[in-house]
Amino acid sequence: MRPFLFSKSTAANQAIAKKKSNTQFIAGGTNLVDLMKKHIANPDNLVDISSALPNKVENTAQGVSIGAMMRNSATATDPTILAKFPLVSKAILAGASPQIRNMASMGGNLLQRTRCPYFYDVTTPCNKRQPGSGCSAISGENRMSAVVGHSPQCIAVHPSDLCVALAALDATVKVMDKSNKTQSIAFKDFHRLPDNNPEKDNNLPADALIQSINLSNNNFAKNCSYVKLRDRDSYAFALISVAAALNLNGNKIIEARLASGGVAHKPWRWLEAEQFLKGKEATIANFEAAANIATKGLKPQMHNAFKIPMLKGAIETALKQCLNP
Figure 1 (cartoon, rainbow, N blue to C red):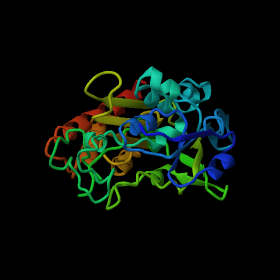
Figure 2: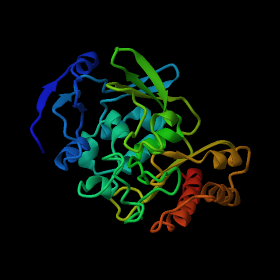
Figure 3: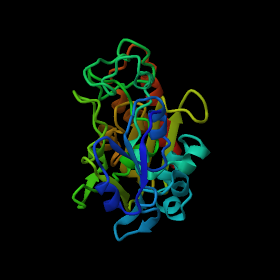
């Protein structure tokens, strides 16, 4: 880790005013510090924003607002989140370790970078780390890589569990830009696919700060599930994850939500499968049909074709668990 200047801000506009060339904000630091140790991130200036952002869950007329500085663990155990948005809690508790969840911020979770091994190995080509250098994963070890939404420039996957749940629940992200104006970004538009610019993970405006994550009231609290399949039971990133939620009237599905991690450069919604389930009976046969719809036409890499049947099974399991949460 190379030397850097460190300062602390107590207000968002104050922090943004300090954003000079090669300056980065730090909150929990659970990802950024790793990147600095690996010489992937080499900021000249670090601005501590842990006292500059909201750190509580607030009820709103539309739903709930989660402050960007809320710790992951505090959010997962918050009474309002548990009562109204338990899918968020389930996803958070499936991720990382208790120690990391105690430090990691909600806003920072949205901004964490891929765990592709070639991204972390500075001796290898990586278009995400060094645009134009090539993607080592395409012809290398790619069992963890994407099966949908990838490009010839990058096959890395997004690492967050929380973001899969937020994608399923149609969250919005409130941000403050460098002119101190606030705007909301729909969660489906927050993260990017790699296309020809895999170095860009998201659509957060330059020098902007995430203020809060907002969720609208819904009818998914009773019947929701988060399934995560990984190489070991703790502190491992998903090979496949599925966030599922059903709005039921008796056994009839009024609305369904399905999203996955471990499959793409961003949290991935299975919109066609959701549409299929709408109006159907909540039966094993319909769950299997929805899983077939989601997994058709996927394009695995050399070493991860196993993800297709794994994903199918995870979708079926998550939907079944929605009936017995």
